Image (cartoon, rainbow, N blue to C red; front, side):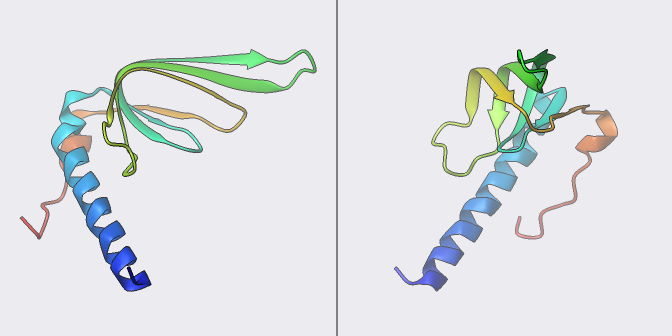
Length: 106
């Protein structure tokens, strides 16, 4: 497989993932971004924690989530727990956020 073939395959996978995201985003109420992943979920609990040395980390638990990851065979996850020292962004999805641009390939 050439590097061009690999790039084409990855672009096709990314487009397929975007289309799946577009189809499922209306099912969820929250977007959660971590350093490594992007999630859609209806239940999120974010708890700041401290180590014994005083460093702050975050524990995020989610239920019934969808994961943006083109390398996963199944993107729907029943329960997710993330522990990170990095930033975590949690946003509530508003109805106007669901107005996505039309896909020119459809």
